[in-house]
Length: 293
Image (cartoon, rainbow, N blue to C red; front, side):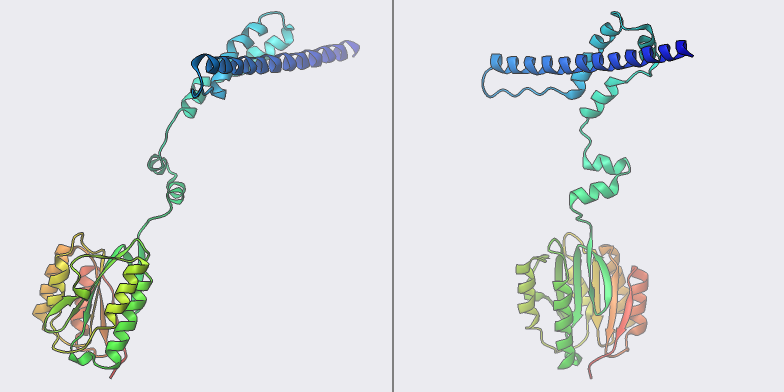
């Protein structure tokens, strides 16, 4: 029993001695490395920056540790060191020197982290007459024919302003009003940025919308067909009726846009069937909104 206790004490003292020696060697290596860095700065002159990697310092201390291990440590401690699994310092250095980008992180399965660091920037959305759509470029094709008089045209103004105000500042919008002919809001020929200035501009021009004429929505779609880049979503509203052949023409234009057309019938339901068809074949949604006289 006494012999066992003696061996245990000797082993404990040996392990303690090893830990102290190992810590001293590593600390000494770091201090020497730092002194070398300071001397290097003095030799190279003011303004030179020298960077010493903690991993490299640890790697440089490994041979010294091995030498100390073979220089007279107790056999029991040496056996413990020899039986320990090796540390792959080259892998640590490789990791420290890596320059993985956020896009690489997404490929490695860190898409949420990369997106969070990147600040989001994904597609946003808005709604119009209760229909939700996602994207960053929204085109509005709205009916301002004679049947949209009084409270109907006022409801249209309110819905347009609310929809545009809900857009993120990095989105774009384009409004086309149609009756017998079509024209862009404010005679604009390109996308309008949904910045506070762009939204204020839209509010002023939307208040100028007036109702008159017939219902020829194809003229509005021909205008947005020329937009570049193409819209991510189209809102199409009417309170009147138009021939089935015009629905076919609208769908032909939609194929060149490659964007869903979200259709709203407002007040009258004369065009419900055609609007449902356009929404369905374009990948959009349909909604009827009651209101107006």
